[in-house]
Length: 248
Image (cartoon, rainbow, N blue to C red; front, side, top):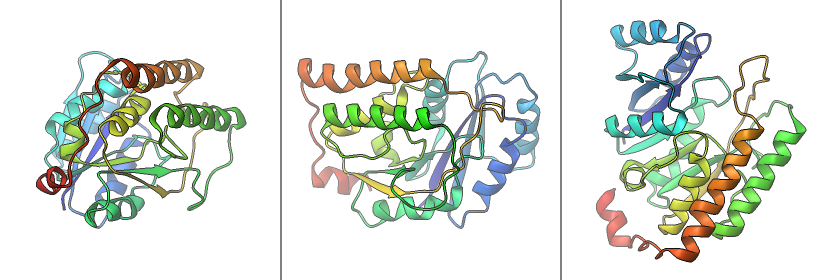
């Protein structure tokens, strides 16, 4: 089963080559799709060298900074694998865990699998208390409006059958895609599993980019795509077993 690895990149010159190396080392049939979100630190030079060397399969250079969600939209349009996963361009998430995330999909149990940083699997770097609290609060609110029982809605590691991901119209251009995608999976009736993963978070001095403003945006997206659309829009038809079989 071919796995498309979707890597949005912005100013990650120090880490992107190592991320690509780690993805390539995974014992799976992978396709690496990188979208550079108008980096200005020399990241593009590294990516063009990797493309020329055949170490990445597709490279998109955004003409302006549009955000993570916009980058993932571009990556999805170029993916050809039966499955797809989002991989951040830093070193916080470990590609060696792809095989564990893929297992419920290969077994026909899941349409999407979330890698939870809080499910007790693998080592975790100890960092910011208030980030932890914020993640928990956003996950709780998301669960309340989607009626899911996730432990980590904001995780980067979300793996999908590609047909499922393609069926979701990604409207958010920045970090709001996490609650947006979660709400749309829930409203669409897709089968979601969670798998515990390790996590090696970065400090702001090491290049971490997310801020309190992204937390506010996530709150807005939970209400917009979860609560608002659940109340005021017709619930999307849940995919039948026949539909899911056809798409695998």
